[in-house]
Length: 179
Image 1 (cartoon, rainbow, N blue to C red):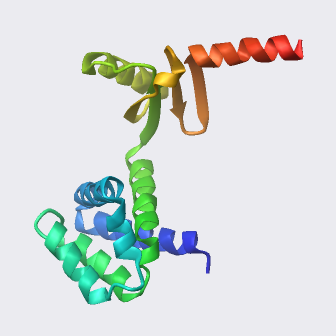
Image 2: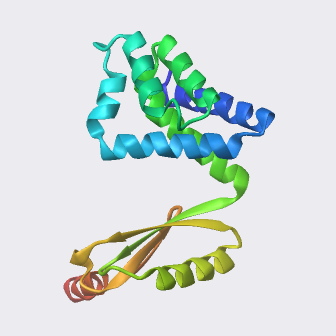
């Protein structure tokens, strides 16, 4: 069976549980916390998905690290994934859960690449404008990319607006080369 299908099935099961028990928001927070740990400590996810590490050690590790911070259903879900020998799909299941959650809550995700660091007031203005324009709640991630030289690139779903200086220079170059 396709790994992505399996991870989506696990995510849907957790999502339905969250709705039934009224803890969907808490599960979302828990999953973001665990994924943040994976992003900040890449060795953590490798350790969890390693077939060399015994399942009992994986369960103990999760309980010690997240036991007091996450809901018992989150730990139970992780234990089920470990028991079913599916730790390799844990992070993709979490990402699928996040997608389901955002769709359910009507949240759009946008990424703003900027050539410079922006203050929070400016970011909030951008969020407010995008929320009004999209008609949905918005999660905005701001990433500084100094190679843009100036301006910004905004990505929302599969759409992109390139208002960067480097983007404009590429357009001029292409126009000069292609006539």
